[in-house]
Image (cartoon, rainbow, N blue to C red):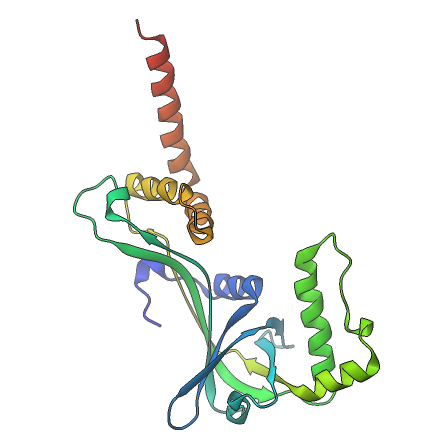
Length: 228
């Protein structure tokens, strides 16, 4: 991943972002070409603190043949992204750009064995059902034994031992407060979900700058209201 210094994110933040997202692109090479699949996942930690990225694929997915426990894969995780118009900046001579948050993790992938797959399914359902609170969580024991057995035979559990972690959060960190705030506010007015998410993230990065602009606007409005 190419990451300009201004957009670099530390390892802990990258892993927290990936774990919260829980969905990404698993990528490997079959010897002739890249292959990839979009998959949900959850992250556990080994006794030594090493992140273990756990996921599963349909049994006939060609990626499974590349899970030799030695060859590294790439797992790419991103969430919101949005276009930024040069017209939104305060400063002149700006260029169009795209903002985003993305994390890449690399490491060897192995196939789960024995009880690891059932444990993974329980942990995965608990992880994603928790996002639906106060709904009562769904659990695999709600399935009939026959249906559960058939599902287990149709998938293969995989674990990536995460070694490399890189993140790029491009949120106009290199811009002035005035430009950062102007784009933050412009994005908040857009209709796309990505624009709203990144606007909130940018606002959280420089809350004092945003507050200062809003306070100045309130003062200006108040002064206009009392002008003779």
